[in-house]
Image (cartoon, rainbow, N blue to C red; front, side, top):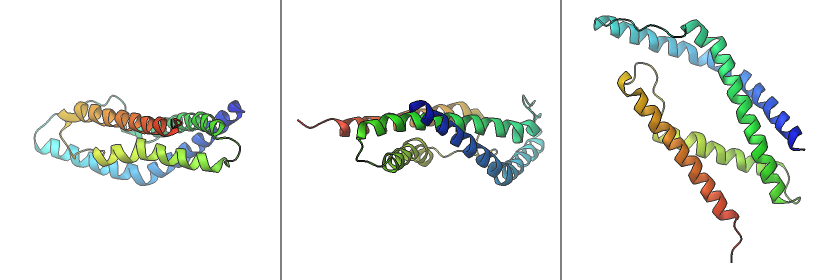
Length: 163
């Protein structure tokens, strides 16, 4: 049963990744292109030298975007399916499968997306100093880890029997 849930979760994650990459390509990429153009214009005005591209913008905004989001969606779907299989097996048969799925999805969203984004929102190109990218990335992932650990500790403490 776990294998079937894992495969289904990964397939749903792939589908979600395909839909997400289409949305990002239609609505996100034009804004990123505008921000990059603004950044390049400001660099030219300041007399700066253009930085070499490790990966071309054309690859980043098409196949790179698709592959990255689809792989991420597949991984998240698989992890969610495994956590669901664990939680559903522990709750007993009186719960419908929908209840732990909704609870887990809500908890994952709050702990892994909402809390880190509220504390450290993502900055688009040209919105901050490039010198601080490493520090901002490290602080964001530290917040992500703290939020995930706090959610796990809270869940573990509620599941212990009293007494």
